[in-house]
Amino acid sequence: MKKTLGFFLVFLALACISFVYDKASARESSSNRRTPIVIAVERVGPAVANISTERLISQRHVDPFFGSRSELFDQFFNDFFGQSQKQMVERPLGSGVIIDEDGYIVTNEHVISRASKIKVRLSDGRGFEATMISSDPISDLAVLKINSPTPLPYVKMGTSKDLMIGETVVALGNPFGLENSITTGVLSAKNRTMTFSSEYGDIKYDGLIQTDALINPGNSGGPLINIDGELIGINAAIVNQAQGIGFAIPVDKVRQTLVKLFNFRELNKIWFGAQVEEQDDVSRGIKVSSVEPGSPADKAQIKIGDYITKIDSKEIQDILDFEKYILKKNAGDKLYININRGGHEVRVDVKLEKAPTPSIEKLAMEKLGLFVQDLTPQLAKQLNLWWIKGGVLVAGVQKSSPAAAVGVKEGHVLVYVGQYRINDIEELGALLKIMQKGDIWEVGIVWSDKFGEHQGYARIKVR
Image 1 (cartoon, one colour):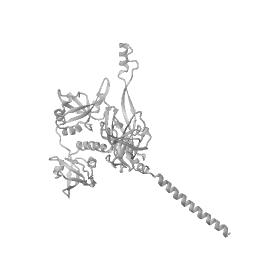
Image 2: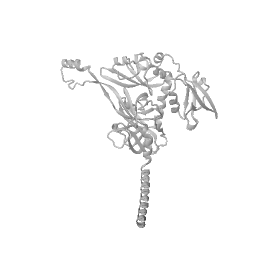
Image 3: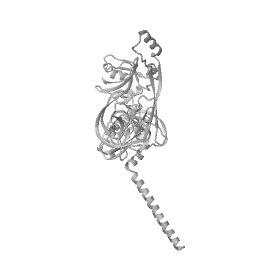
């Protein structure tokens, strides 16, 4: 009996040792599987947005016998079918990435181009309807906004300055509508220049990141990250008929464009009145480079050379932090600003105002030679541009004016000026105010005629 009991105890001890060993091996195996790529994807994945859009499309019936009938029958066909149109709804898929907890999303402009409705779904299943803040078709970047009752996961922005050829990169997005997909590869090259065809004509991209991580349709607008989970680029395009070659817009160029897009909203809605610039040492804050006389900043005695380090309780390290924070505010709101002035901490209070502007119609005529008015939904329908949400209608063009010289005509609709999407005459006015004599501004125009809908660009020299 004692001998049997002894064998049992030895067996039990061996079993326990084996169990502990197997459990430790499993832990070690699991640990080995949690590679830096897995950790980076876990960190960034919740911030990737699946974007779907709805577009209203005007489609004319196609006559397969055009040119092969008599004029009489052609007239009959045109009378019966020529003006017939059909509205369809597309739901193209793309990707985006959340860049802060307030719900700002960066994506490619072509992903949301001409969208009548933009929907966003996150990896946790939550869905939102997004608002387009602004976009720039030349840089192929757009900013969207979703509203959540709780802070949203977001990706940390890296830098393009220290990119290394051969380092591991990960592309995230929704290729072919397959949500939450990733591909891995290496950074193959920097500073590539490529030209791609788009509905705006050929677009030239400078300074692109090249990677062999697969970037398929639907990945557009999604993040390209490094092994630390930092955003280093926005997936932009693939080369047709080539395998293993993808491109992304580098994050430093993304940041530069975002500053312009966010700044437009600030410029349009509220007046701070100080220009700022970034420093290499971000811990010092942002430096005030100019102050407008009579502006809120001037009234608060902010001076050139001051360093803004904090607004309310928000640490300010770059212009993007500054722009995004002020975007939340309205005219009449008060900001409590911490300033480093000659090594001493100073606190000032700035009450934001709505900037006074001269007559927008007068500015448009003086600087560009345009008679302008808001494009209302009724006017858009009359002009067969019902798919456009917002814009400024050219009601007339002065002879021998800058606009006339580049072919802008009555009935054209301004939808972009410079980097900025304009929705109404007030937004155009904000830009007209900063135009200087001799400046050249690129404007995006749409119009419709008997041949269909058209989009184009013109470069206008301000007088």
